[in-house]
Amino acid sequence: MHWLFRRPLFRLKPVLSKSFTNTSILNMPIQVGDTIPDATLYENTPGNKVNIKELCAGKKVVIFAVPGAFTPGCSKTHLPGYVKDSESIKSSGIAEIVCVSVNDPFVMGAWAKDHNAEGKVRMLADPSAEFTKALELDTNLPPLGGVRSKRYSMVIDDGVVTKLNVEPDGTGLSCSLSKNLKF
Image (tube, rainbow, N blue to C red; front, side, top):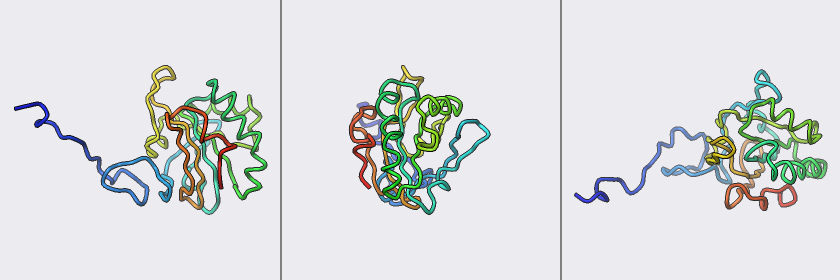
């Protein structure tokens, strides 16, 4: 028998693992109209847990993700843009601006201090990529340690994604920049 006939042409994943609405039988990354997943992130220390779903309840939140703290594109362009634009973003009705990275909370805390992000951008660590994987926006970047987040930005309104910008190559710096965020 030919090898083609012994293997399925595609694999279906069970939808039960997704906490989003509006999903089909084929798993897909988070989409506009989906609810944000229930996941624990960390702010500054492992003892300071932040439930992202609870954080987004009843308000508008901007979440953007980077492949890694202290990496060149993230440190020179992505994070500084959100820090600089934080007042204008918040004056547009956004209650919180959150940066997520697959790093430990101590690294995210140090990165926040290094870029004067305190009070402007909440720096949340996703050390096991739980949130990133739940969004299905994870990518494998061996030079950065393996599983990392694709670069994206999203607007959440009361737990529902209303805007989503995922970089076409997962790591570039175009649609997910603060200056390109539309409310």
